[in-house]
Length: 154
Length: 211
Image: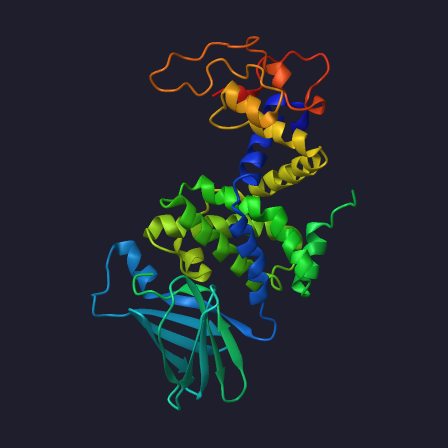
């Protein structure tokens, strides 16, 4: 018997559907649609390869307060290492190359900084919420990190 | 009604830059993502679910080109939402990147295959509901409201169908359990639309009425 031939199942499904049709707040749907404007077609996506907060979590070990949270993103042989302190991100591109780093938040804020010859840069302030960093180095290659929250405690 | 584009068509079009296709995908699956969020009972339910939903859709945009088989999208959304929710629950904080979560987290709680079937069933029901006149669309919602509505609450929004809906629905603390006030508990009179009924079946109370 198909699920729609059974009143109980049909109503259970109906309840599930209506529960989720009704309460998705309009701003959540709007936000989801806006996500499309973040589509990047010409840049490589740098995925998170390491996050000190997550790596240390399973054993309950926390890095001391003085140690910044560190994250590493990777794309096509380029590493982007980030040290996160309150309100500031220290970045390092490996292999080192000068260029430009730009942080963008999902809320639309941008922070731009120059990458020096040693491949390092400083971004501040760091907005709350989801952000991503786009790095463009001298030879023209660009990478964009996946979305992450860059606050000291995650 | 024009036949809706398939998930595969929408996914391919969105990956090629078609914003309208993307919006149709969101319209179709925002409820799926949201319902998975709600299932995890996140601590700060609204704010966390907002955040998870946004993260999921942003990641989906990132992955559109890589998803390949767009039919896999509902499964991808279910899995990704589960991971984001688990990450929030696990850390008590906000989520970080997906890559780490994949390695660290336990197998997902929500069964992906079931999530896909659920989305299919939901699509069928949503299409059916969308075909009803607006006033009629509200009745199924009243039928399956949890917690159940009182007859007064049902009567007002539904306009003219305020027959006793459920004798003991939503008792007010300190007040005796509500007694039938007008016409007795005839739930079948409240059943939403003819098409939901089956000829010759006397099924007693619909399951949606049982608390």
